[in-house]
Structures are given as structure tokens and as C-alpha cells.
Image (cartoon, rainbow over all chains, first blue to last red; front, top):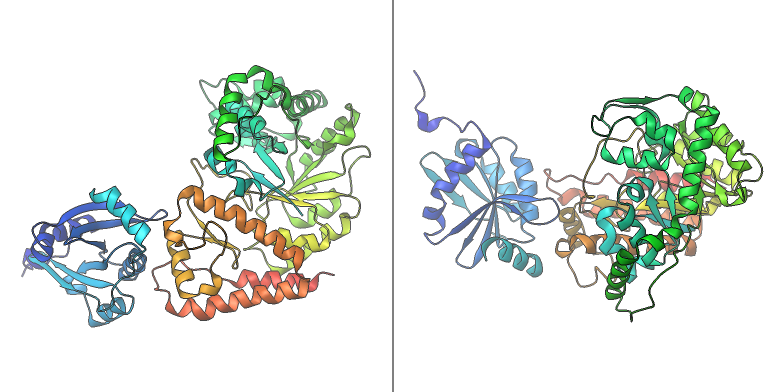
Length: 140
Length: 408
């Protein structure tokens, strides 16, 4: 029997990001502002940046390589108030959430019907100068 | 140890900064840039009042060029009418090949005359570009907060004049072409002001080729070992290079055209100078890989003597403050907040710090410090770095330490 479409994983990272973006305002507030492919430091670009309640939230989305997403998300803590990795919900494990938490990174599980957000208990320590620069360049 | 710092087209603003200017002895101007942006480069170089030299980059006319770039044609002009004619039409840009047999005695004479002449007359370019010269002079004065000086009407000549050169393995026909180039160079007026360049495919060939210069040419000799990345090559190659420099440095002032921190360490065995770019070009592959645009923004970790992404640099300096930099650019600043030009200024200051470090340290102490830096990284950074971040493998520091311990 064919699987229901709602369980089908996205075919691409872009689709994963599109699904997540569709639901972010429900999770982070209707006034949330959003930017994609945000240039931050060096050659890094963050997949999605949100600006909500005076905070910058950085999200790295990956369909497969969650460790790579975590590495990039860890570096996003240098400018963002909260940093997340976004993964396809059925592929999320407790081990991934624990590992992300260890690095001060939260996890967003993405499904076709919504997103589930798990914040890290460790707060980011963004560099004030870089945070201001990204904020001005992205959301001013 | 003399530091030659190569100029890239995106580096102008950085090169005007007093901190950067204090960090090197000679500005190296790639022939590709000098010929492709002739007036702007001459105005920049001559208004800077810096000591400089021009690298003719002759190996761009060696073997096959499948898709010539526009800069090939302008540099070919600098290499004389025969080389330019061989390049063919710039409009069609067809593939072209330069074999050793193309470089007959007639072609070599025309090429050497052109390349040496372009360098010797470079200071005279000031008279034809007064407007640009004035503009660049004002920019330099503004960057250095200096009072307006009288207009520059006569440019400085290069400190070194380089002969054309080709990459050789020491056995091939290109070796003979190089010998003919030097033989003709020896016949030019004031040959003692003309420097030979030795470019070799492999380090062992350097030893023999450094021994076959004709009398009369300058004793300042530039060399380039193809693909000699100091962080990648083994201890044997590092030690061999040190032995060769030691063997020839009593009669030649040797300058490594592409080197990094290990080249600074070769001052222990008499290396006279080394060259690199402002944050790049510590080694060079021949033939050139196609690359365009400015060098990427990278942070130089001065105690690890390597480049990392600014993000990784921030990670390392937060987690291991003993690996942080205390230069005037970095003090009180985070790595990720540094702008592109600040990253370059930091690199220049870090290089100056490295030269002073080697000058002040006995070899054994420096060797111990390299091992300590590797240990610090492995102990304090290795275990906490998330798997998804590109990491430093500091084993090169141990290889450098080992090579230093082996050289007399």
C-alpha cells in the first residue's frame, strides 16, 4: 500500500526549508521577519534567519547530514541569539537533540503538518559587533 | 629575513595601511597585474614609494594554454613580439602551445630584452600617468593621515630585476631554455643587477640548478618549488629544502617566491628572503589552476601558523585563549567581527610577529613552541569541536619541529 504523502520526506533541502518557512510564524510569532541565505561571517551563509521579539534566530537545515548542519549552527551562535538545526522530523533522534544541546544549538523537527521546536538550554553568546552588523544588513 | 609581500588587485586599501606597510620589506607586483592594469598598477606602486619588484610570471607561456585569459595577452606583450605573436588573436582566443623548441635564441633574446626592459623602465612610467599618480598619492596620504606631499614626477625603480624563467625538472628541455636565458642576461648591461629565477618541479632539482649560474648575474636568486605546500610536505622534503638553502646561502642571497612560516624558519640556515600574498600564495601549483576573484576571507592563527575560516578562528580563540592573537587589530575584538581588510591587516601583523619570533628564538626553543601549539590545539580544541566543522590537523607543526631539529 502506498505511503500517505504526509509521511514522504522532502525531495530536496530546498523543499525542507520551504516546509519549515511555511510554519515558522506559527511557532515564533506572527510578527516574525524572515530572510534566507544570510551572509554572516567569512564565506558562511545561514539558510534562514528570523527576527522575532528582538532576537535573531539562525537556522541551518539539512536533509541528510545533520552533523554538518550542527557544525554550521554552532558557528551561528557567534551572531545569533538562538541557533537551530532543522531536520526532517522522522529522522530526529534523542541523540541528535542531546548532541545539539551540548553545543548550545536547538533543534527544529520539520514535518508536512508543522514544526516542533526544542530550544537548547545553553544560551548563545553572540558577538555584539557582528550581531549588530548582521541585524543591520538583514532586517534594517 | 626579508619579507616580500605580493600585491593583488583587491589589496590596494590594505597595502595603504601603515600597519601593513610596516610588515614587509618589498612589494611584489605580479607581472599579470602590472601588464593587465598597467596605469592603475603603476600609479599605485609608484605613489606608494615602497621598494618593489615585478615577477614576470613567464611560466604562463609554458606548454599548452587551452583557454587563454585576457591577462595572457597583456602579459605576452611584456614578453616581447615573438611571444605575443604566438598567442594569436585576442578576439578568437584559441588554444596555444609553447614548447621548448619555440624558444629559439632569437625568441629568447627578444623576450629577455622585453622583460628586463619593462622592469628597468617601470619607474619612468610616472611621467605618463600623472593624473592617476596624483589621485593614488592622495589616497595613500589619506590612509596614513599624512600631510600632502609634493607631486611624484619620477618613480622609483624596482629593487630587483628578474629574468624570465620556466619550470623545469632539471632534466627536461626547459632547463636548456633557462640556461640560454641566463647566458643572454649575462651579456646585457649591468648584469649584476639582474636576478635569475629557478623554478623546479621537485625540491631535489633545486640543489643542482642553483649551482649552474653564469658569473656576473646578481647574487640575489629567487626560487620556486612547485606544489611545495609547507603544511603538506613531509619532514624529508622540509629537511632537504633546508639542506639546499644551507649549502648555497653562503654565496647566494636566496629568496623563496612562495613560502610561509617554515620559510621564515629557514633563516636559521641562511634563507635571505621569502614571498607570499596578503593572506594567500604560500605555495603555488604549476600549471596554474583556473581561479578568479579576490582571495577568500580567512583568519590567520598566528600560533598555529595556519589559515582558518573566521568562524573556526572565533571558536578556537574563545575556547583556547592562549592561541589568540594580541595584535593591534585583534586586541579587544572578536575574530568574526573583523572586516575583510582587517583580516588582511591582521595577517600582515601576524607575519611580522612570526619573523620577529624566529629572530628572537633559538631553534630548539622555537621547535618546542611549535609542538606546544600543536598539543594545545589537540587538547583544548579537538575534543570540543563539532564534527561538522572543518578542522586543523596540526601535525605539520610537529613536522616543522622535526625538520628544525634535524638541520644544523
